[in-house]
Image (cartoon, rainbow, N blue to C red):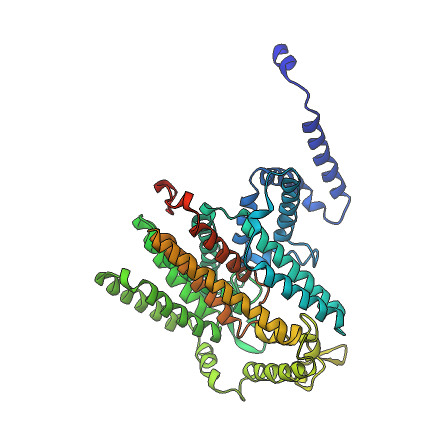
Length: 480
């Protein structure tokens, strides 16, 4: 025993670490957040783990994107969130690695950076000239964070992460939300569905804060799920993929999103065109039976209000939501005429809309006074047109063109080199990207992480397709 004690060496760094953990925990006990004191130790150990494997910190950020209702922590702070906390730590690690020359800045090279720079410059000028400077500069801050997210994607997503970890993170996280939504809806549990006081219906929410945004994320994952089905060699995983695919379709319907239903139909058509050659005759019979089961379940589970909502898409004047969207378009055209070149400032549509007569439709009463609600444009392109003007919108759309060129070049290069599964994966990423920019017609989600992840994925696909040294992936590294 004495020999064991004598052999143990005092490590000042370990002592300092444990002293720091104890000190911070005791300090937390003196604050209103005393219940979090027990988390200090595990959190520090987690940060040390990320110090050795920072790429998994980024994959974790991608995984928890659909859980924003539970990771935002708005009850404690508007600025603090779990993804942001992890992101800041990763930025710190990157700073050290670049400083110590563990990494080279060349890993961040992309043909999208010039457009990013011009778009940021236009956005800054629009914010500088805006009468709503606080909102404009705050939106500029969000834009800067999306650029950082894009850069981290280029740095941390390895080729293994590209074809394995990212698809699995997206598929798994969305699947969890979809399964929970369907279960919650079927058994009338309030956790993963939301009620509207003005309407006698419930809409699936998953673990997000908005049913329309949840619908977008489900559709984004569908092409990757189909890719997993066709590439996995395990029968059990194929069955899981099929069941999850059907549950996702049901979850999309449960969100009650009319635009989501249309976009889902478009994505299913694109997936059929992309994979029709791989369908075996017996597979069509299986799909027919599965769709029959899903349609039957939808008919049983869906209340009459859902079908009324879908039919209301043709009744613009009678539907408050649709008439509101028409007012957003009309207001956008008026705002565009006021500042056609640089716009009124990033993110200022809602500020300007609140000053119009249209906003009276959504006015609410607070303390006896009528307050006009600030509403988003429900259209990402109108948000840019109003906020950054025609120049900003052109630059924004040019991002799409370059992204599609990246995907197209990568698919061709992978096919030419015989890497068919990688070409299939890039095609899946491209269809996912199409789903996002389609839903942008009805959603103001310009800074959604899946969109900026798709931009980075297009660049990585191009890089990996040109990587002759890794032209053939080892068999054991292929997706399970």
